[in-house]
Image (cartoon, rainbow, N blue to C red; front, top):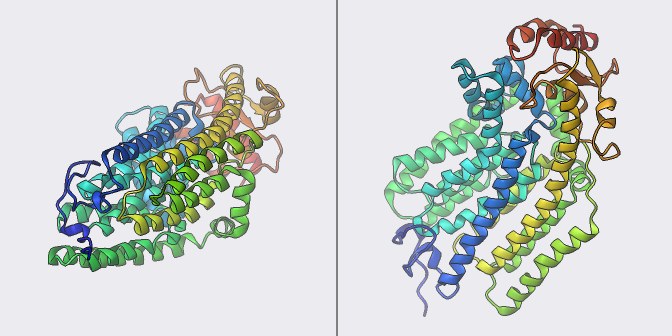
Length: 492
């Protein structure tokens, strides 16, 4: 009779991804976790991180992080007044403010130029999923570092699907994995418990959509409690539970304040509805393929027979090839906007898979071919979107950096693109602030805007004197044009 495997907490640890002891987490199924398989796991993780990291760097370098709301969020970093202007109406998302906005504002106060502070904010925002992955390392048993494949897949599958859009759900993803692993593999050390609590707080106060993945954290703690008889570990779990119950109560109170805003209520209802998810699939058919990859991996990734291996080796490349050949990417201004809906729905799917399969190493070859197919699909989708952005950005930069202070009609910018008939990524009401935050311009001489008197402005006329006083990187005559534009639309 085969003896049952020892709990993870009772097993000796080894270094890195390469477990050598037959009693470590990574060697629960010793017949399937050979050296070659482990090397393929490492290669798959590195491939996923390389593609996700490369796309993220490209988004930062090209200014794609200014897409949609990003230009406004960056503009208020330059004003060094983000809390009273925007973030005070979203107190249940204060982790986003504390982790990305506040450091940039502190740097601004310390003398960093406005545009450099904006770039710091953008780098923090787009880099946080990778920071969250790094936070997983000390929370995992050393012989179970292969579990890093789950946050890697989530970044490549979900985070990169939102490339360019500064959604708070990116911090949901960032805080989730270290919080999940910190509960599932808890140890008695105070430092590990403190890191777990910190990541849980980031997860809770990132975006209300985190509620879909939230039940997995107490489930992970219960699984740890059931396996581990160590009194020190159990005491830490109790202490974590008490602290997190207090954080959850605080979050519920702050959410009640946030939900008093009618605009946020409407946005949330749309985001969390099946209609919102339908919009995601319509705008980004690639996300349906991403979900298919995840489901197929869950079914085949842990099977050891040759039939499952050959099926995976054929199915993943075939899906990627067929999607690449048959799908024509259609870029719209909302292309990456609604993806946050898919992110909050699919993140718990990956989290549940990690809890379900976290005791057995998957087949490295299956993971590698799945990661390759997923990377190919994401590259196809995102490079098309990035190309449309560059086409639009270059036309805008050529118009706003020369000439007198003025309003340049949005349609003129679209007509002046290298490919005038191409789809647009223009976010109509955000264009005046994109005109003033694009990196590398010699001068911010004009603003691009929708000239219609009914076009929306996030600022009111009464705020513009303070905005003008703080926007020290923009010429005074350009700011006067911006004030006239805002006051014509929101004179209150």
